[in-house]
Image (cartoon, rainbow, N blue to C red; front, side):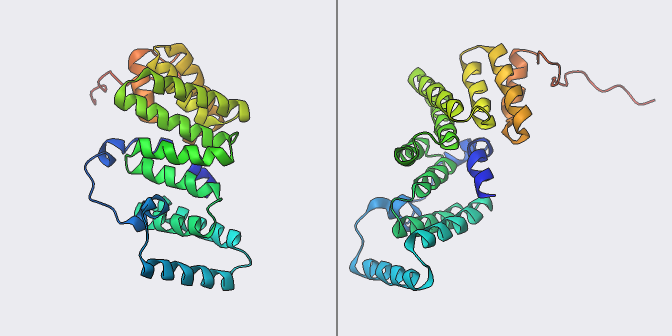
Length: 239
């Protein structure tokens, strides 16, 4: 479940981006990446030490403990409990700051909150550990795509295309990279290429299909394969 969610996150979450971008209340450092990167009080430092000591007694290594809290975090994230998930991710990061999955998870959470720029920063941290991870590259590419949709800056669309191309070079069967490349071509007004990537992605993994984008693409160009079409005709009257 975790790996599916990681791959599909940018597809699933994009539908709620406009809602997430509304003004949010100030978040506690406990539910911000790396505890908000703020100095901790003496009491908080002692609590951290107690937590780490407890984990040292309960797990064979801090790496194992970090992975345990990552799994719990993804369970909460899949249930839509972003703040609860983020706290678990922070505990995983505290146990092992070199666990690249924590930065990936921070990025997904920030993306979910509508903080695309912050999400990209977290994804970039993860890429330093795994520069050729296809799923990670497709998530970063999707984030840049969303950034372009928000600000219409061509540099973000070009960066999205470059990252998604890298993703497919790392794994030619990454359906989510194909789905996002379909959107890149769409914004470049290359609708035939957009349909090609959309179908290739769908054939590999139906979960990669973004139905909102599909509808938008159909308004610009009919599906060359005839698989999808707009229902513009009124239903026939009943006898």
